Length: 86
Length: 86
Image (tube, rainbow over all chains, first blue to last red; front, side, top):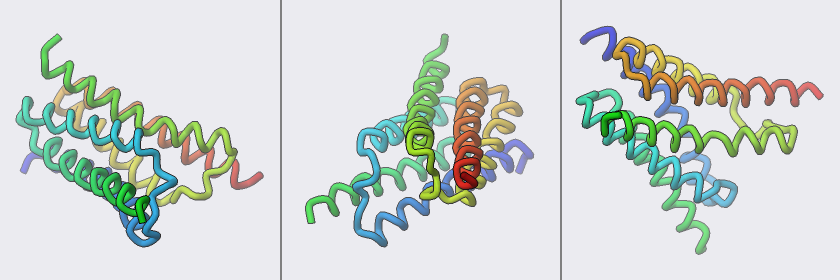
């Protein structure tokens, strides 16, 4: 494992962790109205572009961590819409 | 400009944009109590690691966009603490 990869993985774990409390909050309160769906869409689009960028550069830390964040934020967006209808 | 760089810059602009409404909201309401300072610190640490990672890989889109996001989130954290004391 190179220093480069180690820093990339630490970076990804930290920025990935920062998104989790929001998901937990939405699930616990069964409510995500305070979140802007437009901004979540912008964020998920951006994270998806990072995954594509990582694939082009064969950069694994970038691929894995952005795919994880995209998954978390897509879940938040879907749950927000599901809870809205109840 | 390579396709790779274009995708990286689009990715960075989108994920950078997604952080701005939070900064605007904290400034407008002069209140950031709803945000977790611990999570903002984790996020800024992660973004700083991404900048270091970008420097090691000489990856400009990663450096510029994560430095921008780190700046926005550091501003949110500082403003949160400043407004708290008022």
